[in-house]
Length: 136
Image (spheres, helix red, strand yellow):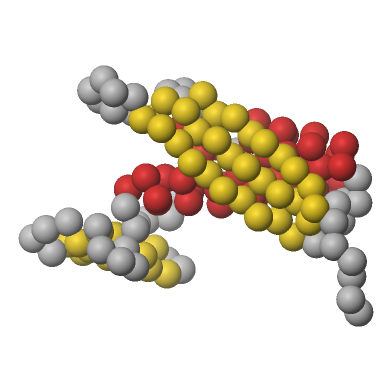
């Protein structure tokens, strides 16, 4: 399966622009710029959520949205690959908590980026639920 092509333009320091067919991201160490692990965690979070959504849709579950936080630690030894990653996801107003837990676990299992990172790091998934009164 072919993947999209990503292009980079770099200054003579660690500042650049990553360009995809659908947008761009500024890379670097300054405010408003993304660092390498920000990009990696972003890729993990977006892949996981996209996979999770496809499972939720197939199960015809409903919810009001979600929040996610991804954090991690690196090994001390060189190469300093990831050692541990924690994905915390809060699901808002789920129609069925048990099915959402199963959907999140399946999302992790079938997300290709999650599977790739899991070859070098332990990944933990914490799911919580919040309920808000609908105001309409």
